[in-house]
Length: 618
Image 1: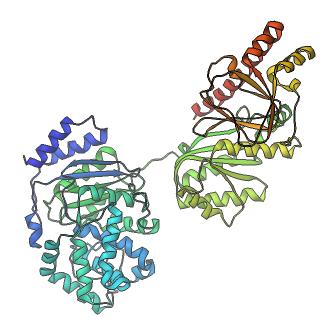
Image 2: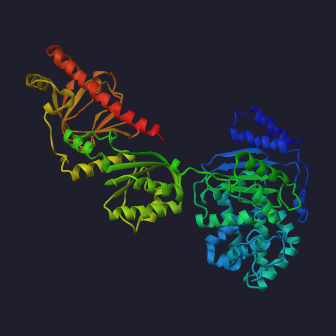
Image 3: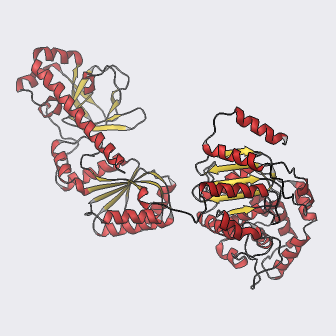
């Protein structure tokens, strides 16, 4: 056993427990390290010097986690794997029309270095040498002498680090590249390459000599799996359009003349290189990179093929073996009966909301929204009476496919014609999900967006209350006798309580209560509005005139949240010592207040349980 593999195994034994997939990759490493069939490429002399014992695996998920096994940090030249990334670059740089005019997209059925072209004298596809040289020619036509740096920069952004070049391999490629010269001059003869052939070939030879590791390849493949966004750097490297076309050609032509067998047995878009590397990318899931220089008769890594085969088979990853329940996208679907915002309402406002709860409908979604997911949502919406306000919560949605975005746009347009307002929540304005939706809906109708679902529900409640004539003005006020906490007290008891309390006023933005302070008083809000918030800024409740806050001082010693004045506030502050004095004078009233507090807490628990029950039903 080679020293590198032995040290890798010892490191694994010393390490903390691995996730299941990490164990699986290490199992692949130890299982297939004994596979010694095949040979390193020798038609490029420098490649024949590769250590046949090297074997590394990397797997990068689209959320940025990278698994590594074996010699995953050993550098080798990328070779033909560069073709996939340069093709994607060309699509974005010069546009699909120019690329498609020069290069086909059909499998060739020939060896990767075949000199044969299509009937209209184009390379069959970008994954064979002729097509890759044509791609290099297109980039050279834009950047001239800077073409290679454009390529190296692009591949570096795919990998998330600055990539170097193996100059010895480059010189070896150039010295032994007569077959590629024949291909290039044939392409020049048919105007597929229009620049200096020697300069274009140097770009091609040098891009094949870029140094990568199995880890690099995993991140590069994961960038393709993540619609062109590097999962580590979070930067958009190429467009989703270029990614989709690149993965398409990789699926049909990425594994040389083994491509048909590959699709049949493995079924994952992939590309191999004679340096011993293989990439495989499953859209929306992960990217895989393997390295082992022993090649089979097709020019593919023997061990790399085996890792891909067992990974696909064991986890059923064949791209054509898919089952997906569209209903799983909906995590909750409800109106606001018993599930209101954190804004406490005046009694007359609550009556309106109770009577018209069906006017607000909320659907909470999860995962990546596809065309099929969104079609199910629109059908589900149509099954019941139309609400006046429809909230789509996206806080658990990671991505929205273009097909889904267009269905959303159609839905917004259709609902606008029947006066239904669509509100999106749980999504920041700067997010990629909102970029996709807003781009699709910008010419359709005005849509509203809120960062938080609670904010969206509160706004929708305001609309319902206003429509039915119950909206309260922020300057309205309520006497102490309207306090729910004090319900059942006599006029004399109210008068005595008022005499013990201290009038207070607060300005907008002033903190009235601070979390961690002693809970020494209760506040009765006479006018204005306050918000109860955690240190994180999360709102627990909003209260208006006629309501109490700080009332938990009756049962706790320390304040558990901040209270802020959202508007100018007037209130009465009753100290706990004064409350105890009051209870000594009016024992029945003290018991009544404690009873009212228990009823208010029970109401809050019922509302919380209603939401829990709703979510547990899905």
